[in-house]
Amino acid sequence: MGQMRFIVSPPQCITEEVLQFTYMSGMDRTPWVVHAEADEGELVLERDVSDSGSVTVPWYVEGHGLLALSTGTLAERWEPYHLPLELARGTINVLRTQLYEWELIGLTVPDAVLRMLKDALLKFSWAVVQQDSGDGVAAQEALQIALDGSQHLAAAYSEQLIAVRRRATGRLPSLLGGALSSSEMDDATARSFLAAFNMAMVPVYWRDVEAAEGSFDWSACDRQIQWCREHGLQICMGPLLQPDGRGLPDWIYLWDDDFDTLVFSAGQFVDAVVNRYRGKVDLWHCAARVNTSQVLNFSEEEKLRLVAGIVCRVKGLDPDHSSMIGIDQPWGEYQGRRAVDLSPIHFADALIRARLDFKAIFLEMNFGCFTGGTLLRSEIDVNRFLDDWSLLGLPLAVGLSLPSSDGTDPRARQKIDLPAGSWSLDAQQAWVARLVPLILAKPGIQAVVWNQFEDSQPHEFPHGGLLTSQGQAKPAIHTLAALQAGLINPRPTL
Image (cartoon, rainbow, N blue to C red):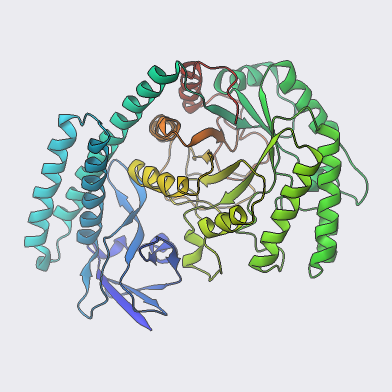
């Protein structure tokens, strides 16, 4: 068994979030299962292997909030590392590497970024000199400056690359979409949705449509499809299968241990949906959250067979329209807590190698939420991550949500404790303004979808909507509306 120890300064930085969500990974960034505990001001990580690797920790940085930050590659040793120092080293290295790579493709780097990088290196040097004192202030300051520089560099990349794409094509061929809730929208809500989005994700939860086996209720879906068509929106329907408590009908649990019967029942439902809405839908979302599902006792191979069967059924019934598959928590943080056979990217790769005819991968990133969500990352980390996924050779669609408060949300299905002071309406808007343009700027991205539109309806993630529980528009939706107005092309296609 391998062990790594880290001195944490101040010791109270070892929070419950740090212990629960810290993980290690190798060169391929696939998380390893680790056990983390606090021991007299030290963070102790234990794992089954002794290989060198990087450590990813939820870490608070002034002005940036709680981010998942990573060290460089560290060798196992008895002497403890200084955690703030190693996080600063890793963050500065990522900034330097990304700056160099973007300079090679012709990016004009702002002088402010170069100045911040220099300042971060000076602070880091001072932190190295005084590391034996146990004072992590200089390392923390180096971290903050490096993240400031990363933020400015990512903004320059977004602005310049979007300008290049518009000069080349006269438009930005991207979809900006939102997931509809099951209830009917009033006029004000509908105007907000249409101002922000040119695509709608129409949910078709098996649990709602076929609550009793063999009895279908299409009223909500019919109403939403008609509304989208009347307003000229691109329509993505799905997920056709979401194997969790929200997506599965109660009666299906009778077949929890009978894979073949469940596959048959799921296939019958998919057939019913596609036959009813064929010709009215532009894109099918075949399956969501299968890679993370623990509701049904299926192996990784059975999960792959389940998704493959749905993709083949959709293609057979509606060959004229494209489909995509969803990958939940695509960084794979959950692998740091439980062993799985396939990482998210390997799960998607296995489906691609099976030569299934789907046209895109939907990466679901519900940032800022922990259990069931994705740890928040810096803009440059998001960029590097999307570059890795683009190597699979398929277009990518990104599903996002970000909380606007850290308070209790009684309508949220997932009861997640967010760190106090970590989120606000302004913080949500600021992250939207930085992340969405960055994602849209990348050539391999075909769509960005906001996963949760309203907080007034029962929803998945606390405070993750663009409208408050009272139906009022949050500042973030105005940012998305401004981005939508700048996309130019009103009906791009995936």
